[in-house]
Image: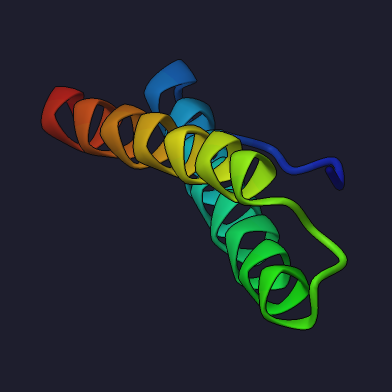
Length: 66
């Protein structure tokens, strides 16, 4: 993560939560593609989908706290 000056802790938390949610989406997308080609097992896709769910929930929590 690049060095960014934040006005508040909540602003920083929002940036981190957005980055985490974005990364989780990318991981799920790649895993689903791997599942289609047979290189990623369904269990791994399920794990990453759960990660994405948690990251999205965290982002929503941080947005509510703004």
